[in-house]
Length: 126
Image (cartoon, rainbow, N blue to C red):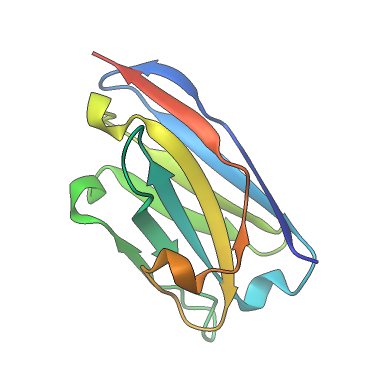
């Protein structure tokens, strides 16, 4: 059974930074594509970023346009962890952030991820 636990959320002023962490247990972490999604009040859960499973030591990443240049996704296979470094935060980044895992190729589609964490709240004040 694969379990994901997010941490690192909180309240931050606009322009500030947060680093989200996601711990993964069960399964074979190195073979999972990992994604971060977020859900603001009254809105659908949306894709934020993904990082691929390693291919010969090379990792690929993808981001929603609104966070490109501000957010960075990374992973540590030795620790079964995935991270989301969030810089230059804006009030519109306020949401519950979820990490998700899937075996195989990466995806922007939330329904392609079978494993989810419980989420961590990020609030950005103006």
